[in-house]
Structure formats: structure tokens, C-alpha cells
Length: 378
Image (cartoon, rainbow, N blue to C red; front, side, top):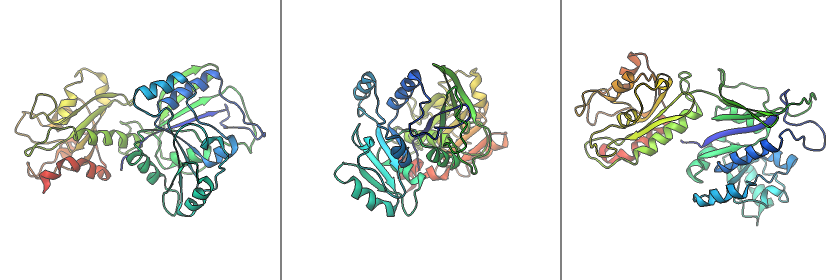
């Protein structure tokens, strides 16, 4: 199932600590970085922190800029992002600022913790959702996406939450603000704890100075970095499946959506079947036609398509698998293998692989891809 775009945000010392062991919170960010964080919050649909962060920091998690709040309202969004926390036990302080500032709040907990959370937070208008016997991050993210409409989730801590999301391969981006100081205390909290993480180097997206802070942005898995599907892959494939719903209805052709994404995460183009005035254009074809064939980013780009690219077609000289290869793209992520409804034995994925392309199929998105085509499969 689709997930929101998950952005992990943290400030750390040069030696990798989130805080020291003193009674007061160590301020690692400066005024310029606090303003940057406020901007990121304003761009997000929801902000998540763990229950431990609420207990230790008592955060409000607000968008402080009146101009940014006004811009959110003008765009049809709530003044403040949804505030989210997680607690396996449901043991939460109802007096914390988290519950009494900003807009809507939601708690994700376990079956056992749900009753406790509801009892403690009764009357505060907080939604309590159980993810089952254990705290399940995938259930949480699916609920945020499917039920609450969250497309961009900012995660502000703490270290345990960041560690769990990174270890489970559910993070799309890490924004790390590195402060020019050392903590040096073995018992102080670190950003990431020990354990098994997804293999491979993170890809650097950006570095820049923000006051005396250095902002570093990484993505865990680049679109062109291998066969392993990342959280970023899931996000773009979900968009491709959504685009399929824009196709004019047809009883003689599939409804398909496609997105072309550069290795740095930039969307190059999107398209869908029968887009515009062309009644036979395919999704991948429509998207690729919007990109300059000489664009050097195509060689390391990924095509996300809700349906396997076609290997044969009667309406055009070249099928979409051939168009992808001729464009220089060598990675395709898709949700649904083409059935024999119109072309028997179609194998677009096979054609792509035979010529050196990397093809990833995510069958968990098949239902989304099939939905606008169910009338063709009856």
C-alpha cells in the first residue's frame, strides 16, 4: 500500500549526539536553522515525534511564521500540519503542550495501549489508532496516507523513532543539521542506535550553510541505485497509479499512468494514457515526449509505470518498452504485469531486461493499478 513521503529531520553535534545529559535541552540549531525547520514544517502535511520526545522536550511543533500559515490556508490546507505521536504503552501526559497547541492530533499505539491513551487524553479531541498487537510502522504510514490524506510526513524524533524508520527502509530523506560543537558524553542520546540497516551508501542531495549550521540532505536509495525498491520508489509508483485514474475511459485500451524521475529525485515528466488530443497515446510515451531527448539525466532516470510497458502495439511503430530503451533509460518500476486482454504473451519487462534494463515489480500496488481497468477484466 502507498505511504507518505517520509522526511527525517534532526540536529546533531559534530560527534553525532542529539542532546547532552544535562537537565535542560541542548540547543543545537541557531535562529536561521529554526526558520528553515519552520519552512519544512509548513510544507508538510503532518509532523511526527515519539512519546519520549514529548516527555523530554515538551514540544509544541507549530508553524511559527504567520505568513507560512496564511499560505497554507490560501492553498486549501489546514493552518497547522496534523501532529502525530507514537506510544506502544499509551502512557501520555495530557498536560503536555503537544495536545493544547496547533490543529488536529493523532496517537498511534497498540491494542493494549489504546485504552490507556483514550483514558488519559479523553476530552482533548485526540484520535487514537491501534496498529495491532505491536506498533507497526507500515500500518501507521498506510493509515496516514489512505485515511488522513498525508502525502508528506516530517519526522522530528527522537533517536529511537529515526532508528526504527531507517532500519525498516521507510525513510525517503534525511535532513541533518550539523552544529559546530561537541557533546562527548557516552550516555547522551544519539541520532541512530545500533542494529541492521539497509545496505549501501546514502546518496548526497544537498549541502549548504544555514548560519553556522551545515545542512546535509541524503536519500537512502537513489532511483538508479540497484534492484532494491526504496520508499522513494513506492512514492513515485503510487503517483503513477493515481495518474491512471485521469485517463479518459476506454473499452479497448488500458488506463495507465507514468512518471519519469531523475536520479536526484527531480520529476522530469508525467503522463497518462489518451492524454490530451491523442486518443492512442500511451502513458510512458506521453511522459517521455515532454522531455528533451538530449537531457543527460535520462541515462540515470527511472520510469515509474502503473502497468508493464508494452512490448507490441498496433497504434504506433514502436512499443513503450522500446521508447524507454531508445531514450536511454535503464530502470523501470512497475506495479502490474500486462494481462492477455489485448495482446497475448506480452512481455515488456522481458524486452527491457534483455537489453540491460533493471526492472522492479512491486505487486503490492497491483490493486491500485487495476482499479481504473476493472471493466476490462470482467
